[in-house]
Length: 51
Image (tube, rainbow, N blue to C red):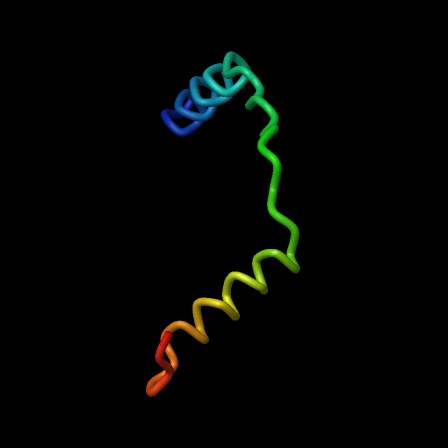
């Protein structure tokens, strides 16, 4: 075997021993919620606007 074949074989063996990643179970915020937060932040930083 060539050195490239040896390296590829070793990498393949390592990859087969890896466990599958765990699924992400966190709750993602809705798109409308994110848009509302962005709009609120934009209004907060508008020049001349006082709270």
